[in-house]
Image (cartoon, rainbow, N blue to C red; front, side, top):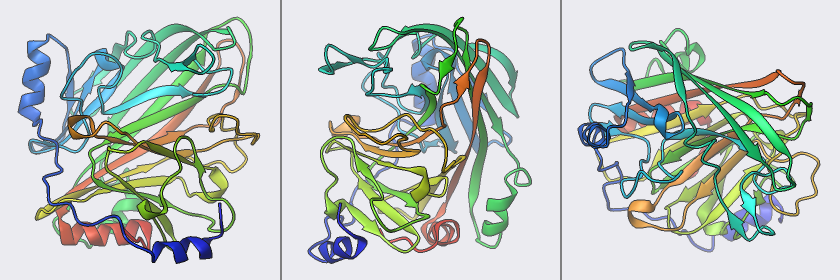
Length: 372
């Protein structure tokens, strides 16, 4: 990749991203989603501290957070075409890597790809539930890697509704912005080694949040020199990217496949999403997580020779229409896991909803200078 100066010069050639004249919000309302789940006899759990803001968790769907609702509007992408298979949307936990010899996803000489059903949807069991506060779940499973290593693992997921005091830093920044509504979550997930042998920094927790395009993914930067990101599939078009002294933004529309990864020395442990909609009201999703510069991150593109990979990834899907979605992905570093040991990671999810003017102020407060 070329220098930042060359990037900026190329941006002046044209701007691909014009305003979208469309209703970007998910058409599957809260009532419609609950009705659909009930008809299919799929159990779900709700967390809410008020009548107007709530979240929806579906253990049978890989322990997914399937809804973050303001009134009836869901801010997460949900697959309305089918509830079969792994691609149901929402927020899920997998584990990395995706493409190396320790992958559980690739088959047949890297020519095909799958998601082991024992991991997702798995068999998540609810271990704790308080309707106004938290839900905890657990899934034990066995998998085999591409190089025929067998792992016996366990995932635990705990989702807790937070108050303003518990998410203090962000709310102190936002307190003077009028008419903002929020849902704040602490998301804790752990991976336990239940095999009888040690796992030596080979696998790491992978958090994936599906959003509704079109919109802009915001990646705050700690460093703007050198190679900032790495392409996983087709190269990211420069017309879909903007950079400032504080952030890099990527336009997503769910109609062209690309995925870019950011190493931890270039980023600041946050990723955000702002939709492109012609509406009076809008929203912002902020995802925060540990960003360890010296951590061992195991996910990286095919044939990438770096000793450590990426902490953040932005994925744009390619099928369009009702299967148009994008993903905000974050990784925890791999650790040495003795038999019975676990690695855990805590993620903060903040959903803000309000007038577009207030959301613009929130973006500026949380991210600094952003060009979208």
